[in-house]
Image 1 (cartoon, one colour):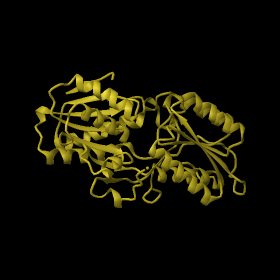
Image 2 (tube, helix red, strand yellow):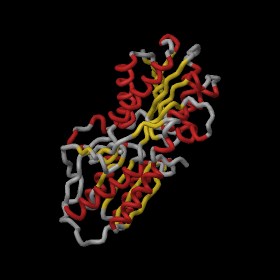
Image 3 (tube, helix red, strand yellow):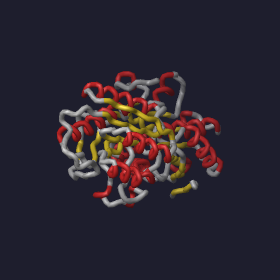
Image 4 (cartoon, helix red, strand yellow):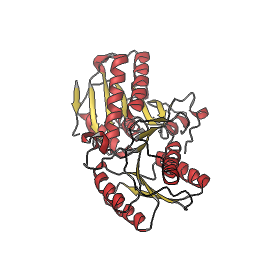
Length: 336
């Protein structure tokens, strides 16, 4: 039963077989000096800081200039910064959109400026604001992670923790927290729910629509808790670490002990901060996704396209690692 509140490393690369031509038709620029622009939503978020660092490092290795712009959550700025980059003769645009609805306008600007466009992390459509309603051939090529893989791993780990805990289903609920208009977020939580149900059975679920920030998730989950009194145990997952951490904070503020919470993060960059304190936490595990690998892969993919004419893959995915308090320090995860 579900209660709704208005609530990707280049090694091991998996590439989709369908190719999409959302790029300039100009000949390869084998000898030209390249200057790329990487526009990121929430550029101060840990994952995107890592992504920018990986992109800059790969750009330096390849001898190309790279400008990284933090868009925050401002949709209008995505368009204005893209226009500015095109006016400044950028060789290629890589974009993590603040909202997928801006996709068609970005595609139009890139085509008008004859600049190749890659989507990073989040899916966008060339002809419609909702990628979920977009025909496959109209999706902009994307570098990132497989949402189904990410969610599936989270759901499997949550199921394992739940079965180990031996909780009574009657007094246990699942919290799913995500920004409902972000396609990859919906895909992640759906995959987590499916994997959990397959391994541990069905539980009543509370869906919480957030802004994908810790504070936003905390506020919305707090309201959800008030509407669901008498629940003893909580299983939590979401689109990212921010949602899970925010939910765990709300649960703690409501008096729910860490032992009664099973949170599985996605990203691990906030989860590790909880573990580093050595204090009890409901964050039992998190899927480590290395933003630096995605940034590097996006830059490499763009440069290969510009220098050799290599077509963009429809999607390119990076591998992931599940971490917890016992192994995160040896996983390669950098915790800041």
